[in-house]
Length: 224
Ligand code: C5P
Image (tube, rainbow, N blue to C red; front, side, top):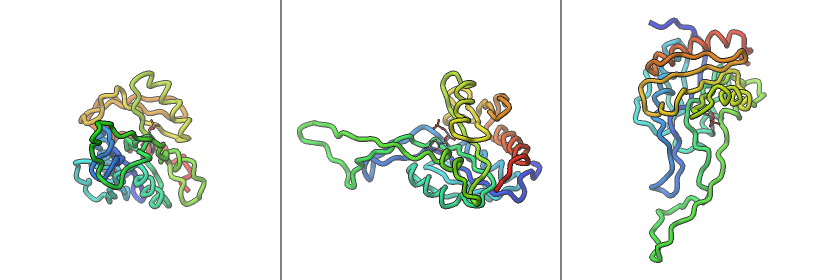
């Protein structure tokens, strides 16, 4: 039984990878399974929140009672978040969003060239969803923002820096870069007072602890 620490709160969560098309049947993605984001969505719902989950392509069922919006690309994830962020109390960006998309994606399936030359792709940067939401000054759209970071080295310094760079009150660092697809994780929370480690546990246990930490912090945050 989980205490209803988020009763009456609306939460928007992103989860999973994004898929950036090359042509109608091919694309670039990453190894995010969506497990952590889905665990956070489930824990938020258990805590009494109204949860909306914007999800990239994953092989997981929507947690009970959670409204899911399915997207593929980072641009679609950005659009879905921006059109639903108004009046949310909390935004948690767990998704592993592709930093780049292919600028010259083809409308038709690409064919091999008879002369053996390979196609050349140009990349352009995707919008940063979390930084955009965090920077909004719109009164209806200023939720308490939480980000995730997966750094392979120097996490304590990079985590603190990333929290400041993104302009968010709470950043969750994954310790080690082997979290993708795993059931367990070790996380470290960065806020304005420093950092706290949540020791290795399954992702649902950590998600419940994270929701409890967020609920303690939002009482000091002006939500709108
Ligand atoms: O900058 P970096 O990608 O390491 O930051 C990770 C955090 O930012 C995660 O919370 C991720 O969901 C979010 N993010 C985002 N939009 C992007 C890139 C990252 O929301 N385009």
